Length: 125
Image (cartoon, rainbow, N blue to C red):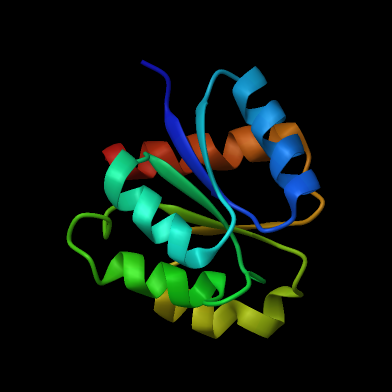
């Protein structure tokens, strides 16, 4: 069974590219376009990893991550921030929220794969 990844990304073009890349790498992809939808889908589909844009409409990715961490059903799921924001903009808030790792846009497919695999390995140890 392939690793299930939830992508939370509000830009449809970026979402399509990410879905294509990750599917081609053998992952099962679930899509969400808002933080609220991402939280709901995490509770329903129980992904192994969440790839979270931070600049989302409604609740942003940091708030969505905090809510995921506060829910026993989703607290254990690694959240990788995928953002165009400069890291100093969100570093302390992201750490407090429980973000597992950060990928800055644009990100190469190789970097996605190595970061996802690193988070999966940490989760199983």
